[in-house]
Amino acid sequence: MAELAHPLWWARDEAEVVTELQSGSETAFDAFIAQYHVPVFNLLLQMLGNEADAADASQEVFLKAFRGIGKFRRGSSLKTWLYRIAIRQALNQRRWFSRHRRNEWSLDGQNEDQSAALQIEELGPSPFDQLASHQTQQVVRRALAEVPQVFRSAVILRDLEGLSYEEVAEVLDVSVGTVKSRILRGRRALRIVLEMSVHKRTTESTQSSPGMTGEMAGGGE
Image (cartoon, rainbow, N blue to C red; front, side):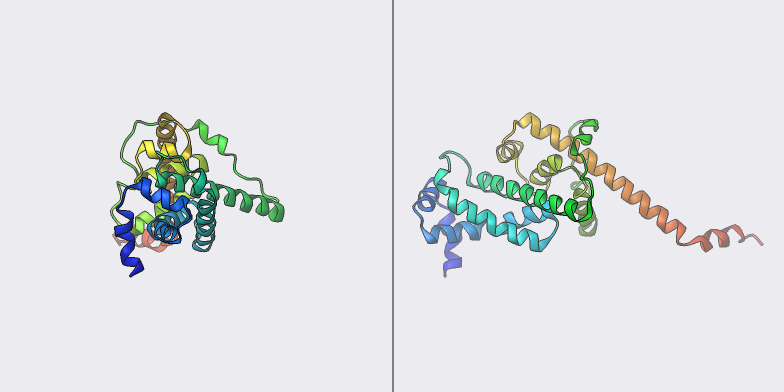
């Protein structure tokens, strides 16, 4: 019965929801988690690329939301506020992983500033919009992990989570112009990664069947 009550509970004015959350209502927080657990988990999965890490990060996000709800600004969006916490958690977690990988393997991290040299294109359809098959979309998501973090967050929020430019700007705490620039650069970087991936697979496929070329060449005998 509690699960059935969540959609009806959430249909109320968000200001009322915030009031109950700030009052410490357990029912309110149960409904809050039920409403946003899947979206937050999916966002973190895209950011971190690992289900176990995303699950751990999700718990931290809702714990921080519980502790910080008292500071929530009236008039803001609960969704974008929660997504901002999730993005920061993912970034912190990735930085933690990066530091420990460097300590263990002495590897230099990729300099995200190099991505600033990418040329900005005109706004066009997202690479996700141009894909039909679910399998291909998964390939794109793996490629997305190679896009510099500063651009990846904007692309994920806009193209995978479906947020408006204004909502993405609120989540990332930057201007709409900056959001559009990051999305353009992120899409550009993603296309480059995908093109390299396709070229690599095509080359490997050609090299793995050398006999085919020989048979075709000798077919006239």
